Image (cartoon, rainbow, N blue to C red; front, side, top):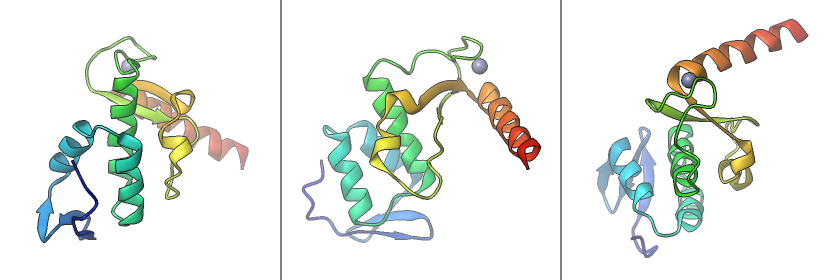
Length: 127
Ligand SMILES: [Zn+2]
């Protein structure tokens, strides 16, 4: 994969390597096929190309490799699975949160939306 020689930057939310734009699905492909996820992650941090979507690709791949990305913990569905971060990732892309299986809840898209709604509701109640 990357030897670190490529020039990488971000332009309009697109990753650019040596002058070539990469789409989100191409970045996802790179993450999926990376031998060392953490060192690729560190390169993304170094090159300042990390965004929220990419952090989810990293977490998803990490969970898949650990055998955790199989079914929804809410309803048992095996379709449209996502990683819900218990401690939210927000704009601070900490390696601990993104590569921590105990910070993951594997949810299908439907359960994830329900969970987010519930969390927002709880936040409002607290205020
Ligand atoms: Zn579900």
